[in-house]
Length: 413
Ligand SMILES: Cc1cc2nc3c(=O)[nH]c(=O)nc-3n(C[C@H](O)[C@H](O)[C@H](O)COP(=O)(O)OP(=O)(O)OC[C@H]3O[C@@H](n4cnc5c(N)ncnc54)[C@H](O)[C@@H]3O)c2cc1C
Image (cartoon, rainbow, N blue to C red; front, side, top):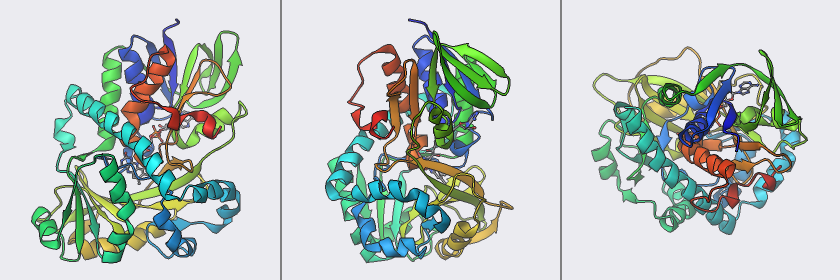
């Protein structure tokens, strides 16, 4: 077997594929127009959570569908001009908002998440990144009892998948996070969750491990793929080259490239934003919190408290919309004393999502020597390493640690 592979896209997914293939003895070139981990993989909440397994097609969404469509809730913002083009996606999404599919898809996500966090732990140690690691778990917090009741199916899923979690009364929440104001009526601690205080540094350190072991990182904008005699002709802004095997991990931009080969675009783009705040002197958080009723996640990081937002459904390249951050900031101030906002403008990222929320991982359905790993939605930082492992097994024809059927590309391509 030819042992050279080009991996397109150096986000966490591409970096992980490159590392795992290199570990198996492949000569790997990792190609990106930016530096490793500088796109979506840089600005996320940094949470590697065993509980990051809830499909967004949750039946609990149905009773509040009208609120979502009217943009009344802080965790969701729809741009109406985009609605028509999104209808086929939304139809498939709504068909999955059922108890059974929720539990089945969540179970598949749990297999990915568990295996991936185990790999992260090993890579974090190998890269000497322990100072970035926060092992204090993650807190899901509720301001209203009916919201907590609404999420009961999610807790059933955690139970079904053996995800350790502890229900906390308000006093127990404040014992864990004494600087939070006393506005929460219920907490759920995801005991074994870990988080990273700087996701971009994590990506760059993994990429450096790859380079130190002889891997090539090439800075180039990729514009075309064409099947050639013994593989592929790849066109970039640095010219054309022949490559034998290709793995495409270009996140939200993947459909553009594989669309040239006749594959449909299966994605909705859930854009998300972050800002960074400094807490009042002498205060802070020990672990990430998800303030469910207010629609934001706040994670302690090297640069301050990073506040991330929910979904902004719109075109991938539409102008950034500052409303989501503006909406959540007053709610953040209700939860913790803030000194100042540290970013002049919010950062924006793109979460590519298919209706069942599971990533697309595997061989391209109608082409040889082409593998795909994208559509990681809200969980890509967590699921990077397992994506690399599954892709490497597909390329080598080796058995998988569990059935990757739920991620098969043909379900949407
Ligand atoms: C606000 C927010 C919070 C999140 N929080 C979490 C979290 O706490 N935990 C978690 O697990 N996940 C989280 N996520 C999701 C996670 O960040 C993504 O799923 C993950 O980063 C996807 O990685 P990727 O490698 O697929 O994509 P990307 O990081 O987007 O990488 C794709 C790469 O392809 C390159 N590329 C694209 N087009 C071209 C081209 N034409 N030529 C060359 N290169 C190209 C890009 O430059 C980029 O580097 C969050 C996302 C957001 C937006």
